[in-house]
Length: 426
Ligand code: FDA
Ligand code: NAD
Image 1 (cartoon, rainbow, N blue to C red):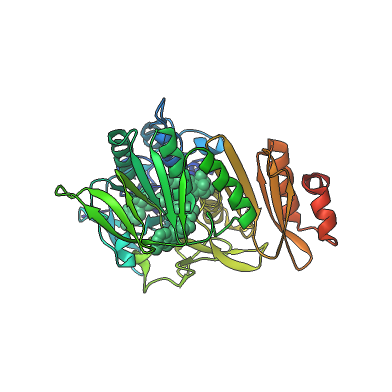
Image 2 (cartoon, rainbow, N blue to C red):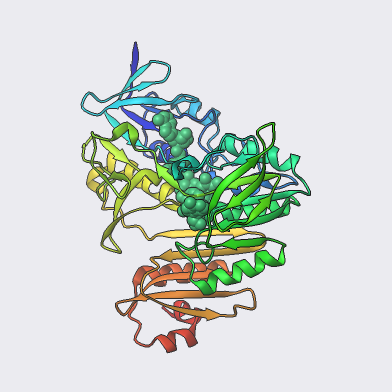
């Protein structure tokens, strides 16, 4: 028994939602598109899970943040999919794929065949067990990737109000969850192996601004060390975190954010992989011409930087999905994907944006004791990356535009003096 569709999207996250909207804009007839998702709900804006979803007052809840509200577009509720004749197969994991036969088999045993497949399986959170540790299944240890994780985190936070949390990892999840825990009146200690937070992107100077801000909110930092083990009570709850440097941190809960792995396993041995993801062309097409990959799972050529990258951010998921659908539906009218990397975060009342690439020499500018400051990255004499905290819409647009144009920078000292004015004048 099985069903056949022209287009099938495996994975029902951010990229799937944006692809669905694009398919309808380009006139896909009812009955031709199917989305299969392990999650029990229609695609939603995942970034909400570490922000609005965790607020103690008036938290964001579905259906308010279904895609595509994050890009100020239509909100696609289950009713919308129904009205557009899009088959949403929810709560269903695809357990195997055969790209030669163009079939997928779901966990319920159904075979679904396609003419064109879009892989939008995203990524999964890395577990402590993958670093040789144990304790992930304790009831007060939380990860954060999907709605089920977010609901668990909310419940654990509620049971720990006024208590202590240890946050393991100093990346995006660690920083955004630490802020949310503080807002929920929980005392936070952050633990990570690097010398400063957000080590993949921030310079020490930028990181120090955020760390000082977090300290002013009561957050403690234990840097340069990792988790060794948990102490558990007789109910299997973590009561303390033991660190490799000998520290022991009594705690009521733990949040773990130690990176992700793209969900490629269905296609390993069938499609070419690169950078841990599925390698695709500038048309988001994999090594099999009937299969496309988008979002966190796709390693695509970044024209601007002249190399293949896999990005783990929502803007890239939205735009790669849209581009893949254009390439599928109107191949002759669709150019190669030409993407400018864009990352952002919002914590407490702070808000930053970054465009481009953080390689080369760094020039900081603005007032690091105030609310607006930034940095430029200059590589081989050209501006390649821009960071700005506390900017206006126009200022963010200016750094994005300047970074895309990659203007020549002759004098770094002059760039520092000009600061934001440099981008505004490009
Ligand atoms: P995504 O993970 O959204 O979706 C993948 C889907 O595939 C899931 O529904 C999954 O269940 C499903 N799936 C996987 N395997 C399957 C299988 N075998 N069968 C069926 N279904 C399967 N980025 C940013 O730029 N700014 C931000 O502020 C944030 N904030 C943020 C907060 C939190 C808590 C997270 C976890 C992530 C972010 N991100 C972010 C990152 C951003 O959310 C991420 O880049 C996108 O969700 C990627 O979209 P995808 O559609 O590729 O994967
Ligand atoms: P990350 O890659 O941002 O950070 C991982 C962190 O794990 C590192 O900074 C490091 O401090 C820590 N780490 C690594 N090994 C460790 C170890 N053995 N012990 C302790 N700490 C260790 O990943 P994340 O924070 O887990 O985020 C997961 C995904 O969600 C990423 O793809 C991220 O892009 C995405 N996300 C993005 C945003 C955003 O863009 N604003 C927000 C939330 C999540």
